[in-house]
Length: 265
Image (tube, rainbow, N blue to C red; front, side, top):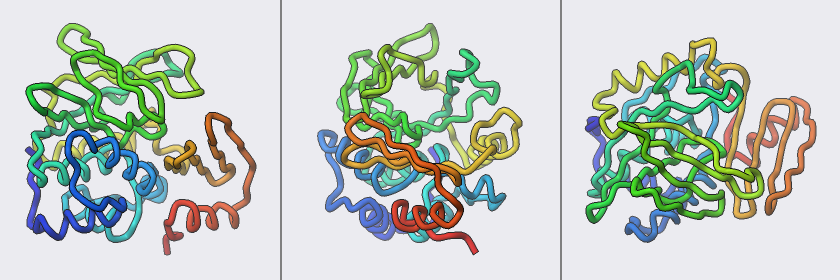
C-alpha cells in the first residue's frame, strides 16, 4: 500500500470531492459518476514535464498540485490521487504498474511498465479503475472476468493472456475494431513512493516517452472531448471532431477558460 502521509481524511476527502464537484462519497454503482466528473474537471496534461517543473508524488504533493492549484497530471499523478481517495473511503484498492501498447510501433512500449492504474476488489470480483489513460479512459470499472462494459467513451474489456491481463478498448465513434490499451499483472503492485518516482523519471527523460515531446491537455465533456496543444484546439462533439489552428495568445486563453489552469509564472 502506498503510504497516505499526514493529511487528515476529512481534509483530503473534502478537497477531492470539491475539485470534481462530487456531492457525496460514491457507492460501487455510482463509481462511473465519480470517474466521469473526474475526467471532466481534472485534465490529463503534461505541462510540468515539458516545463521541467517536477511534480511531488507524495499525497501532500498531489493534493497541492491537483486539488489546491487546480492542475491536472499524467497517469502516475491522477491514478495515485484517486487511489488515495478510494483507500481513505474504505475501498479495497491496489496501485499497479502496467505497460502501454504502442500503436505506432505495434508493440509494447519501450519504456516498460510506466503506466499506473488501480486494481479494485468488490464483492469478490476484481476490476480495473483508471482515471489516467488520457483520451482512452474507461469511465466505469472494468471487470477482470472479461465481460465488456460500455461507457460514453466507448467499450472496454479485459482479456487474460497467460500470467498477464490485457485491457482492450473500442472508443466510441473512433475505433471500428477492438485494440490493445495496456497489459498488467495483479502482482505488479506499486508499494512505495520510490517506485512512482522511478516511473516519473522514465516518463520525463526517456527518449521514447511520448509525454516529454510537447504540451498536451485533454479533458472530457458531456458531449465528447477537448484536446489542446500550443498550436491546435480540437473539440469532439457527439463523435464529430472540429480542429482549428491557434496562436500562443489563444492557447493561453483556452488554458485558462477551458481547462481552468493558469499560465505558469
